[in-house]
Amino acid sequence: MVAMMFSIVTDVVLRNLGTQSSSHIFTFNEYFLFLIPLLGAPLLVREKGHIYVEAPLMQFPENIRLKLIKLILVICVLTCAILTWFSFDIALTDYLQNELDIRSLDMPRWMLTSFMPLSFLLMGTEFLRFLIIGEDPYQRADGKIASH
Image: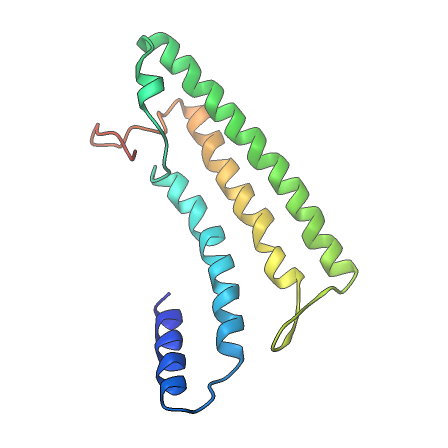
């Protein structure tokens, strides 16, 4: 992200000085904007930094709330499994058909799309971990609610 910031600042400065910057700067920044959320999402789930709305959940008694949390975790695991499967199919198809992302440079598309199944698999694994060990995905270790 720091490299992105410096490349954008460099691009703006060069344009304001009347010179042309590299056309690859914009392309690489687009790639990084795609990859950063994919690479950060599993850690965000692990650290309980994901966003949720707690008000509806807190309206229920504790025993029902715990069952609802388990149901939510099952839905999260299944959603991540489905997204892993479909994104793996996309990445594999891109690889087998030698698809290219044509911009300022020709880049094999599978190099980008292969991060999707990895990200969804890791997120699903984290949600499954919460489900198996019975950990509340909304409660931090210090007892405070993780995020809102």
